[in-house]
Image (cartoon, rainbow, N blue to C red; front, side, top):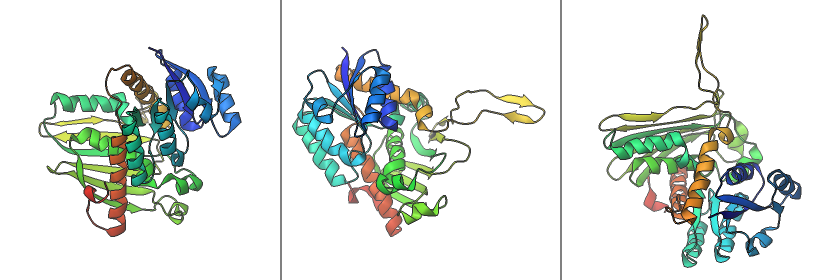
Length: 333
């Protein structure tokens, strides 16, 4: 089975997904759409596909599924349109910045028995999946504590900050999903702290650039998330899971994993510079999983419900910062 794809959005993440789709033997990129014609044409020329409007892709008989990489405020509407058109949907996170809008969108998906997968790519990183595999094998016993470190090499432009929904909805949301992936239980309580330590302009835009979040499940399992918009040493991505019988961790990855020893000491190459290179394998694997789900080999996960819960955790973190207290997830979900 070859899944015929339409790509909506030819920006940075659209290019990443175009590479993943065209690199899969079970997929074919048929068409790309973008509000900037030049961007769509450049991507189409590179991969040998057509440029079409979103409406044409929606009505097309030669497209089975779409990958949505457009701005966040278009996601929910596009999901609904394409589910109604009978096409499978892979959508970048988040579905929307409003929990109410996400819920109404998922109602439409269910009513039309649509297929929706949300792009939490880190679940498909081979190193993080290996951690989860050790948990599932019982290698560390019962999970007790999870530590997630996720720090960007530099802050995005302030214009992006203003429309991103804020650090919890834009950046930490990946870590909320990863915490759920590793804890094995649903989070019931959230407490968060936040500050502006990197760029005062981020604070002026109403956001934070340095946050810590503590998550807790009903049984007492905990996850600590550390985020910063600035890591001068590269893209910092680490996880550690402590259990009743031991610990399993995934360290930072480098483009080249070597160590040089000399009279000056021990040195290693720098970390990856950002997500496009650090998570190349993860992006390919999540598209492969989506294609497999369409072929009846497994479920399309992370699901829309996973996206909803991650956003609810982001809202709980925001509420915790604003009110200076522990927030129950039931207050936001």
